Length: 299
Ligand code: GDP
Ligand code: MG
Ligand code: K
Image (cartoon, rainbow, N blue to C red; front, top):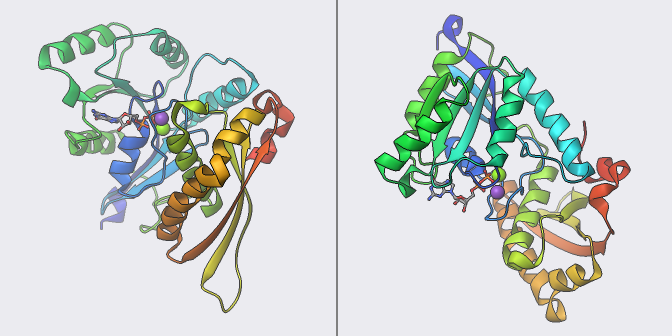
């Protein structure tokens, strides 16, 4: 490694919900760190994935969705997201080739116009469209904003990811290696654990539970001379009816959520896990900004 030419930088990934931001990040980092779901906005917090090669370090930020805020939490998230965008070295604005231009993108592009950070347009899900459709989408976006690069990819199938990575590298300045080479995320394990539980809860309850579900890790500890990690977590829902769904008949649903989450947590921590799950109703929690800190949303 020639340290004089080592490049590094922070890269923010933005785009409408479900365009494939987490899928991309997970593919690049090769480890499950951002949760994937068919439901929009399951990535609430900033998740960083770090890719270290012999000549560069790319630090990715899976920014919570920039969208028109509908409630206080949205407002709060947006502020964080915009501030993040000002500070990063490069922005990847990801779109879904399958979907046309919409109001969500219009809103994002308006926000981008106020920034000086270079922006790549990443057209994802090209496995779903024919070349003509792809070209016409690209033409449309080209007219809306002056993108530094336009790169079509398939995050799911892995097409063109290497090219995108090398274009990102080209844009970065010479800089230090911020993180050790074997570190893929700077988030505390607690956060990843809560995201894994939330992912299972969202997946298993399907459309019955909106994304207004939070998971709090109450306890995570390993007693000396035991190789079991004890995790106690609370799933927060907004209504009594949702609590019923999450628990399920005779606790069946909660058991299923727990057993799937436990497997993932064991893989993450590399040790046996005893997982205890609780469900709590906290009415209208999204609008209670004063509660945000308790749920891990920090400014
Ligand atoms: P995010 O909300 O932007 O983080 O989107 P996700 O990464 O959670 O992806 C949303 C959905 O799109 C998931 O079902 C993914 O499997 C799917 N997806 C992501 N990338 C691709 C892709 O390149 N091709 C196809 N066909 N599906 C994709
Ligand atoms: Mg996501
Ligand atoms: K998602």
